[in-house]
Length: 427
Image: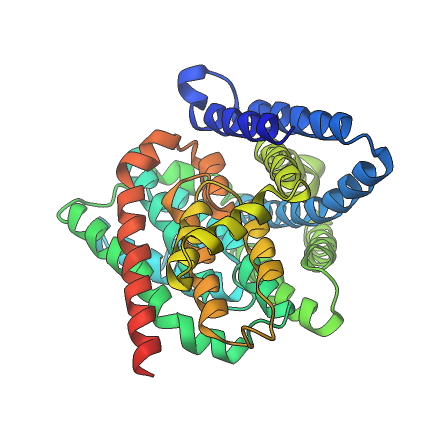
């Protein structure tokens, strides 16, 4: 059974990577792979109660991610419909791509630490669409956004799901992880960003035509643009605060905020006729979000869950521990593996392998794990939630990213590793 599961998982991932040559949508490959994996697992195990219980637990975790993603994407669509991103785009005056990549990279890095890498990627790629007209330019920027968002999320307890897992599990504390991993994460972003800025040197920013940017200006006032932008970004920023105060999962905060934004939109547009307000409503925004990418999330997370429940990932981690031995090399390999396999079950398996009695809070293992698992996913486009979101929003091909961005992500990844190990040994 285990061999069959591994073979099917590899084939499903290969089909996702070869989406364009095969002309098969990646969502279909993910769903078929998930269906086959659970069918084989359920049939071979024979314990239907156990399998159904595990599937139920998996769905609880996946639904939280899906509801959060739907809420965040809808909020971004509403802000976009009100032309709210012009609040930022109108203040960016640079005409050089090399300067713009620095500006957008730093904004993404710090915003990701406050929000999370997935939401930040959605917001920033939506912004890039308002700034750049050439698709080739947007692809390079989207690749840098993935690296910057993952790097920014790694040093914050609320910036990346794996860092949050370690924080909630008691392996790290918020102040220590920020102090310990910040410099390594910054280097992880700076090295690829510097190389990309050099590549783009001398190229001018080609903005979308005014008619595209200002298409709804006659239907949204400056007050409406500013109000919906502040409301939308404010709700996204306050989700971590909501989680900290109420101890409820983030999806509850995003849905609560979506309801508030919906009510606010109904009130400020209450005096308009149906035709004028039709494109500004939350109902319209819900129709505009990319459901294909959400279905892809569901399929890929269901597929990975079978590897977790059958202990394939846990056994892989134990094998590494026995074969490699050195902690720094093991964690480095786990980070690189997160470019292929979702980093959540990898970190979950590692948390089960190493006890707090042997590896105390804020020890080298846990901080280094947070950095590697958080940033290693940037190496491949399918290696992180941010990458999958970018892949869906800009239709980035797997091999385009591998050819143009993966090497830069590797440089940043190992650069950050060297800096963290040096910093740890010195201080």
